[in-house]
Amino acid sequence: MDFGAADASATVEAAPQAKIVYDKFHISQLLGTAVDTVRRAEHKAMAQTGDQTLTGTRYLWLCGMETMSDEQFGEFQQLVKIALKTSRAWEHKELFSGFWSQPNAESARGYFEQWFGRVMRSRLEPMKKTARTLRAHLQGLLNYFLHPITNAPSPKA
Image 1 (cartoon, rainbow, N blue to C red):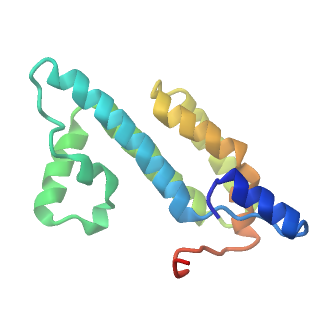
Image 2: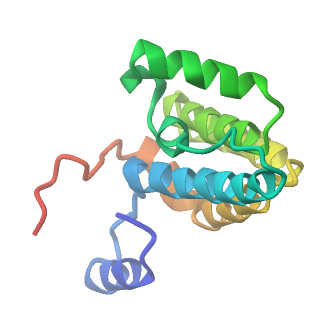
């Protein structure tokens, strides 16, 4: 499920024995929103000095590299080489994906703690806020390793 408090409380009330597993898609969406928040602020600051480097790049930061065309990938490589806050935020987002490939919950907890520490030192407030949100819901993330399920293929109601 997503982080909706109403969903979680209804689940606990209706099925107190159930373990809540937060969905990968919603975690990815949350991280992508944080990256976009960093990009917007950085773009605004850069545009005030006449620098339009980030104009029209939103899609590149939010999509996966595997879905980029060769032209988009080349443009993205050039952007990543520049010392941008957005590049650092994107890197934190991408590094989080390693959480899901850990062999068990214990390893995932260790991976998360390392990732969390790195993000908290980043001075990127939107990423730090997202990291704190993920930490507050860590047990629901770790439950994925007991029940590796996702609602991604579920039909919309």
